[in-house]
Amino acid sequence: MSLAFEVLPDPASLAGRAAEVVEEARPRTVALSGGSSPRATYALLGRRGVLREAAVYFVDERCVPPDHEASNYRMVREALGDAGNLHRIRGEEPPERAAAAYEVELRAALGDEPALDLVVLGMGADGHIASLFPGAPEVEETGRLAVATGAAYGGYRRVTLTLPVLNRARAALFIVTGAEKAAALARVAAGEPLPATLVRGARWLLDSEAAAGIQTPHRS
Ligand code: 6PG
Image (tube, rainbow, N blue to C red; front, side, top):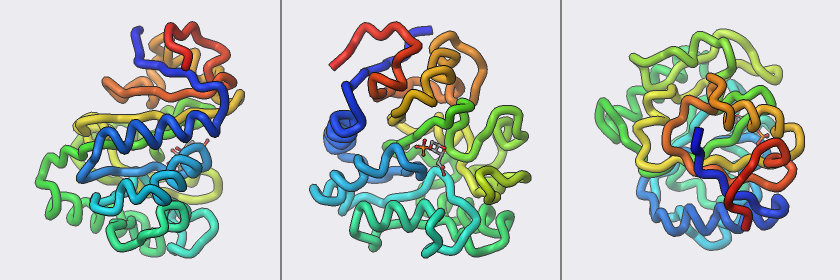
């Protein structure tokens, strides 16, 4: 399975490369993932004002208030430094209501089949993306743009964009770092049907630890 992998020596150089890729894309609409891997990239984008003119949506959100330490909105706002153009998922609302409201917002802004210019994704050690976890029913959702997870993950229920939205994006960029991701990445490279494998045409930026289990033609 030929995937566009690019390997950087370490997380810092990966963040720099990822910021370059986002800047080159000049997205007018973008959806950002949470977690820890993309934080350094977001900080670079914030310092450079790269997304200041863009409409910034969220790939997913933990069902917590916006000032909660686990909030993806809080992490992104602190990293980008400009909250004016952030379209957050209302994590403080009941999950199903927050998901329905986000769907209405996306449809109003981007139409019934929203095509974001760019989605920035991470990948969990189990091959999950967004809040689409292996074996979860949300992975199969195709009618809605955003759904609430039935289960809690990492201690929180989530609201997540669905795979059709991620696959309709004009570009998808994965940022994957750390040895704990190497096994899942090898499974993705082998074409195993993990959620991460289901994102078509994505560009993958890996650090050398995450890439330890795959043969990559391109190492920067
Ligand atoms: C979240 C993210 C999630 C993340 C992966 C990887 O809300 O946690 O959207 O999908 O991208 O879990 O997380 P790390 O980058 O922290 O390893």
